[in-house]
Amino acid sequence: MSKKNAGKTIDRRLSVAPMMGWTDRHDRYFLRLISPNALLYTVMLTTGALIHGKKLEILEYSPEEHPVALQLGGADPRDLAHCAKLGEQYGYDEINLNCGCPSDRVQNGNFGACLMAKPALVADCVDAMRQAVSIPVTVKTRIGIDEQDSYGFLTDFIGASAERGCGVFIIHARKAWLNGLSPAENRTIPPLRYDIVHQLKHDFPQLTFVLNGGIKTLDGVRAGLAETDGVMIGREAYQNPYFLAEIEREVFGTPSVRTREEIMDAMMPYIARCLGDGVLLKDITRHLLGLYNGLPGARKWRQVLSREAYKPAANENVVMEALKQVEL
Image 1 (cartoon, one colour):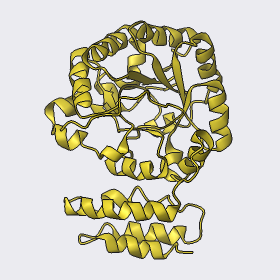
Image 2 (spheres, one colour):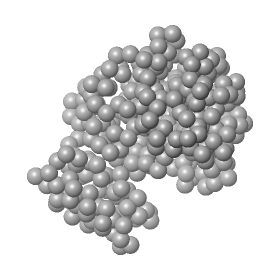
Image 3 (cartoon, one colour):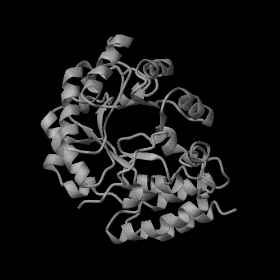
Image 4 (cartoon, rainbow, N blue to C red):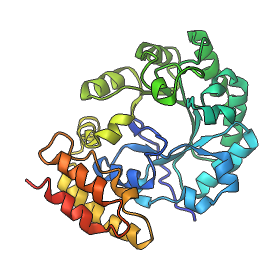
């Protein structure tokens, strides 16, 4: 069960956001082949799912994914402490508390973004998790919710958890509307306010702030790193995953990132192993669709994978056929 984590200080200059339905273990394995140094996050796992579900199935991952963080959704300090301990036992490098998701399902559970209105409770949750584990406990949040979007509201929220020992905050630089906007709309309609995150870093220099939201270019990465301690890439890392290779070279100076062909060479044994374990091909290949974005054959690559990988007997031959569409 336990996978020993690296035990090293986490480099937070580049991370990939937790994205529901997207950043599962297969996607993280794939992204690690592209970027050796990015910090990867699980999808949000609720305390209820971990306490009452199949822990091994939910928490299992490949050791190659390190550094990898477990994001939790919940609002009960005892439950969160229990789940944080499970995460540590499974070898995760960090435990992150979701205080930014605005979905109705999350709100019905009284966690996610609505926790921003309860800074004392969040601080209690942070403290309980920190008492339970020796790995970092961090918070991912927004810059505000609904009409509670003043800078003072945000600093009160940050300050309460900082006083209980949280030293790392990942800030999605948009407020969230808990009513009236869908989760997708909450990722695009509220305006980005990078200046607020910059101000947080100026006012709390002892804390670590990672900027999240709308970063899609190297210039955006450079600008974020000039003002904060790290950048977190969201949808762009999924829709255009090879963007991470550009950032890897830029940020970490990695001299020889894998080519797309080398990434797929490395993926094939993983795919074969997973198929042998009963994983369906579509559950892996859906994450690969954007690898060749902008290159000749990219459309046919997507078409072959989308059409063939969902068939009952789909195997590695589907991927090999798709690769023929992009061979130069």
